[in-house]
Length: 425
Image (cartoon, rainbow, N blue to C red; front, side, top):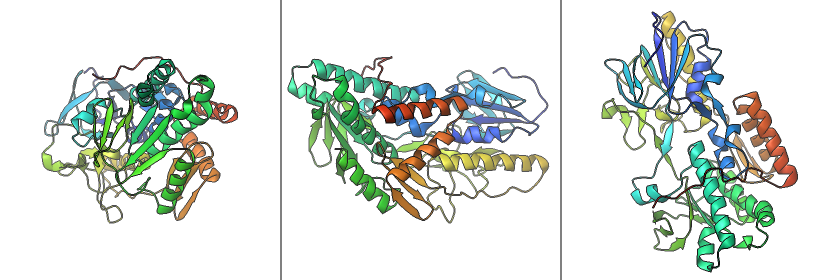
């Protein structure tokens, strides 16, 4: 890989997500060469991916070029590449575009979809972790409605209009609510000769409640909101198989569907090159100390979703959401400056700002500190927090006007099949 020669120490950051971006921004005044590597040239605001999937937003509303985000850094270099492995002893990163040496390495690779070893589901299910995957869901949804509008076969039409979502965490709940809003407000106008009432939305969850990471009050409220929107909720149900047409549950019951979306879990996007004992086997996350140093190394760090830091407050590690990633990135920037100045490192302490989920128009639930509430006020807070957290003024403006348009007109304007999706055979 081609980089300017320098006598400065070099920091290599792998990943331009919340953790990597927040770290890089705070390294502005550090006299080092900073290199970021990512397999995409943009940062994705993942909490709003579901709105791209359901035609509420265009993808460029929630994505922002990494080079533009960090262009004010003096000795910063971005490389669009996929990291293949790391040699921690030789202090070298290997990518599909070449290799690079490092003095300090920060892994901020985030997570990937976890199919729990189920190859059939992995082959046929629709994940939603990236912008292309969100666009695939949007295209498949619209393609299937077009097919249903032209179909004379009742069984085929019912399968095309049956939407099954596995995983009732925030992503699954928000996706189910968005599909229900489309069914209620948008599709009846677009497909006037189709009985849109035949559209069914099924939400499957293995535990005994939706939004299990949140409070029981928020969970109960979200359950009520979803039922009012017409979502069919299947609690205590494990989906064991899907062949592209038929979904099979652990009870043996089957269901025909052409729309099968998997939001049931994530696993760390780890990188080859480290001993097996550096990883939590089940979670695929790197074990780190309270300074975010990977166990056994003083110059290699992991932050965000890929980091597994056990503390008294979080014995199972921090939640894999945006706030711990952002806070760890900002904190590590301070510790890197301490390292350069020869000062002792400070342990990371997570400040929980709360958890929220939205379930359609005027409906959301929020757990903030000791407060638990739902409804319009929670929905308003959810919108404000997500709008302010978006990267770039342009994106904030575009998303705000899209939301205003959607709210006033009961519409979602981005119903475009720009890139048709062809399911795997």
